Length: 527
Image (cartoon, helix red, strand yellow):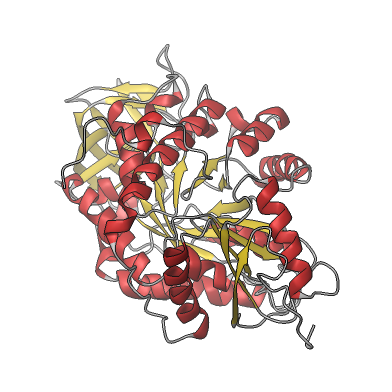
């Protein structure tokens, strides 16, 4: 049937009102450090704050974390804190502002030296001399191999080396080199550990400060994720990382996919991880940039099959570091990640050092909502979601059944008591086109669920005597207050008895707003 041109699509004519399904991860930095800005970002829609361990020392991190926690203590919203380990990322050492506009500018044809033990960069006989954060640069890079700086914006070829002492390169594409810019060596086989000593110190800091997620950089295989997981399990064994009995104390791991080897081992990496990040900055340097969009879609699809959350990151609204609006291509980039099923999209420099942190978050939120309005129009023709690999488990099977029920009833919302977040994750990966309210009495679990697409975590103690009928009353009042449902609207509810216990949910009920006999309100001797 051909649609009449007089029927304007909803996404074109109406402002979306439904909460965004895809979540927003915002990187903290000088631009977003003030309590006023942090409060704005939370209010506009940030779901996860990222602490980048590549920049700053622990004293600075302590101050930043204290400011964030002080703001989050004033809100009922569950916002997660993600610590991002640097990994074996090679960076340029400290660079003074020799050029009037900052740093040191190199031009095609220039020679550039990297010297072991070099402190601050200098100019010697007209040649810039830089330090680097890993000495493997002076052992494993052979003449003729590429040396890339700042995500490949500056390109050089190695031309000579004194093993263990220095490396001389010739610039092919020039630019401005400033402190701590990343160095990529896509053609060199580096003998470097997956997790450095600095990373282990950051892991200890993250455990001590009870972060909600840890991102592991430059993952190549599952063994590297398992190494971190086992160390975290030992460090969190006393349970101080969790706040309620049964909540896993280990900090969940986000594996960052930014090397071609990770794509080869993708299935095993996803299985070993709690979530995945498509880290396109280094991925686009380590492999042919033409393959990165396909890699992104492949990673997202594989994560969906395995019911694991996936974040798309790097340069999403990059020009908004300086500008008040993004390019059309950047807006399309965010939208395409949402169309492909990303659970979250991430901002890096845009919120860490950009001029308009609040504006960029608001822009990303609006792009997400308009895109999802179009997805809602397409939902009837997209078919039944694929059952995840974990379908034989009771919670996964129940989530799959709930999708069918919600679809048949045209439910306005799905509500679940998910004490440790497992059921919420299964519901999230089924891509319900309605909000999912996930209740828990654990603040830790609520913050972890903040990363799950479509899930709004709500942290409260079980109402009344942990009876399902009392919870039904609370749910109904909240949905009406939030404007998600009115009298007669159907809502799917999932829970176990008693509320607040760690167990597989096994009971499903249909709530009709305003109907006192619906939901879990029917008399039950067990209550």
